[in-house]
Length: 442
Image (cartoon, rainbow, N blue to C red; front, side, top):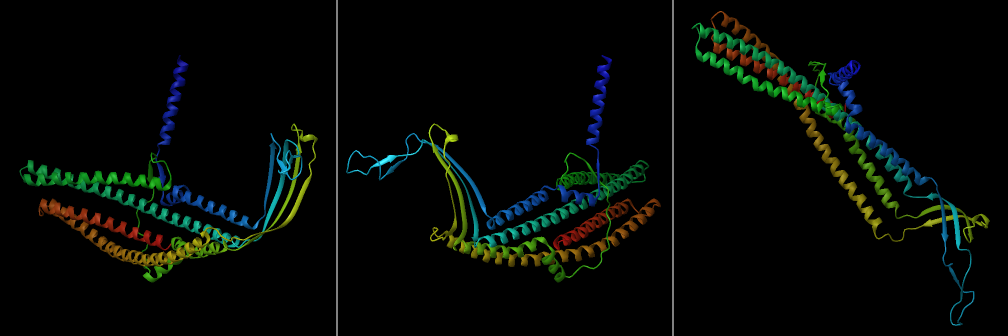
């Protein structure tokens, strides 16, 4: 009995240990998050499979140049043999005589081969599949870039929210100290009750914001875990911290437009559509041309009774020749396909121009956001330093009895607002950098 209890205790302890290990926090840097997203994100993995599908389609199109070999066999049992008219006995002279010859069991097999000599659809079909494979690779790169940008945005948002939570705790602590001071002064008869009420209201007004920020962190973590393809129940701990890289010089709109047009896989794929439509038009036009093939066949056949195939003759027949197939009338489908290809080319031209016009608007937006966020960040730095200095001076004056409680409360509010505005400016600046990198295909 003791042995059973001891073993059961060990099993429970092991289960608890394994559960603790499974629920342990996973430390995650920004680079690790990006690497996980590139390899495990479902959209990226699906795009990789799409590349493999396009590669297999290229194999299919290449088969139009290669011979096709078929093996066929057929075995039949006749309850009544096939009649042959023109010879045999006839009961009446005004009727054509017929006779039944051969065995009840008939078997035939053959091997046939067809080698295309001239197939006008083969080359454009192969070119189309090659372009589609390249298009799928561009879409994969575009998905990767978009996923990386989304991961960076989510990671950055979590860092900013965590910093906001830290600042919110500091603000609550400052207001709680102010509340304790106001209560103490009120009990000593040196303060007013309205000061205590104002301090209490300030503390309570900050608490809902703290709950909102905490919920936002959890929501953004769930989105980040979905992007990098890990279990949503697994907790993650971000190891990187906020920092401001060297601002450098913001490129001009013309430079950003040129880089986006030439480097962004999305716009490279748009340019590729014109070539794809050209090949589709060639395929549609080639469907109206003749096809020439070399054909060959080797056949064995036999007839017997009572399934005695082992005691039967197997005469063979073989031939080789040329086959010409000319599409004379296909129900107007070929003409319709040609017109469809022309319409697709017109649609592609319109969509390409529209996409480039949208790109110009996106470039203008990204460059403007970069300039605006950088200017606002520089202003927010100065305002935060000024607000911190003002709060320190007001707090010193309040301790010396020179400043009022209202002045200290206003100074604390200005400091909290300046810190929040600074964090918002940091987020907008870094977010604009990420958006520009995504747009130019980095």
